[in-house]
Structure formats: C-alpha cells, structure tokens
Length: 248
Image 1 (cartoon, one colour):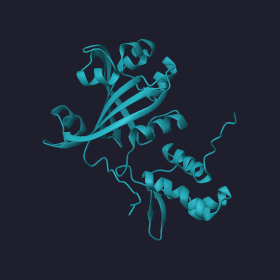
Image 2 (spheres, helix red, strand yellow):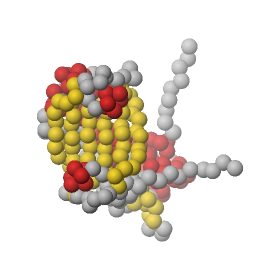
Image 3 (cartoon, helix red, strand yellow):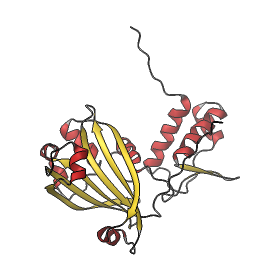
Image 4 (cartoon, helix red, strand yellow):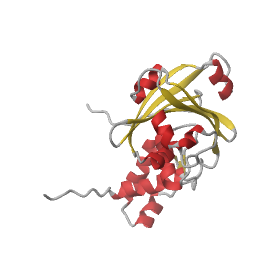
C-alpha cells in the first residue's frame, strides 16, 4: 500500500527556521527580523510565501509589525507560550531558557502526592512523588514560579530531579533521556486566582494580587502521564491574544 509522505509547505519551513533562531536568542526582543523581501530572496520563494511565513510568527506572537518600520521580535512580556517554546528551544539549542532568563531550583524533595497531582499522574492517593520547584527570573526579576511533580518510578530512573542543580537541557528532556519515555503530547489548563502568601513573596507581589496559573500535563508515546506541572505568573507577565477569521 502506498504511503503518504508529509513535506511541510515552504512557508512553514521558513517560519520554523526563524522561530528556532528567535528561541535560540539569535534575535532578541526588539530586534528586526528579515523583511518579506529579504526572506523571499534568501529562500528563493515568492513574496506571498515570505508573507505567509512571517504571518505564522505574528499569529504565534513571536514577532510584531511596526507601520513603516518593519517586523520585530516581540517584547518578552507580551506573549508566552511557555512550555511549547521551551521544548522547542531545548531541542534546537540544548538549553531551556534564552540568554536573559535563568532558573533557581528552590525545592527538590519526595512528598506524598496531593489529590490533584495523584489524579493527573494516574497514581493512588498519597503515593510518593518528587516535587521540584523553580523560580524563573528574567533580567534578574522573578517572572514565574513553577512546580513539577514526577512519580517515584520516574525518579528512580532519573535521579537528578531530586537534586537542586539546574538541568540545562530541561527536566522533561532529561527525563526522556533517562527513562526512554518520549513526550508525545501535552495539555494546558489556564485559569486565574489570588496568589498565596508564599507565591506573592517569591514573585515580589503585593497582596492581594491575582496570578495566572497553568496546569500542565505531559504524556508519553503510550499516552501515560509523565509529568504534572503548575506554573504561576504575575498578571503583567502574560498576555493571551487570538487572531482568527470569523465565519458569517
């Protein structure tokens, strides 16, 4: 039986290349990216193809157009598709964070799974899990508090998650290499609530303060849960925007 071969359209290949350069830090926030004319010349494609490639990055929030000036990398506070961007950056560069970001590991310990964690990881109530808490700073300012949970089985195969040292390629990439379980898909659930006192203290917020919370579940190739994470960010660190056609 013949098999279909998937070859991404040219504009997707161009967008992927430019996105990778942005995530690798070759283009920093505020830098101008190649114009449509330059993209068309560099890749030997038509102007409409170059326009579509840059439109992909605009819709994703990586770049923004400025009337009469060109197309520039978006400022970091405007858009963040955090987990997806970090997976891509890790795959392209071997590092999770861009040059102006870093993480401090605050906690790496064994605990009993809270109900929500046990349910997300498919574990019995109060099962032992590893809890790993990191504070992410951008230009030395706190912008995210992130907590990841892994099963005791995963911890047994990937012992570095119990150390308070940074894992430069990213915890998920390290766990994949240590366990052989390849992340296949992820699901994010985004909501808002008031910050706890500890969250407000670590993020430098006054109280009361609202925060954006993302609950993130990673599943492997067998559709088994691999990681459960919760990230908490200040209200000025994320903006969510959708650009779409309206059917009438």
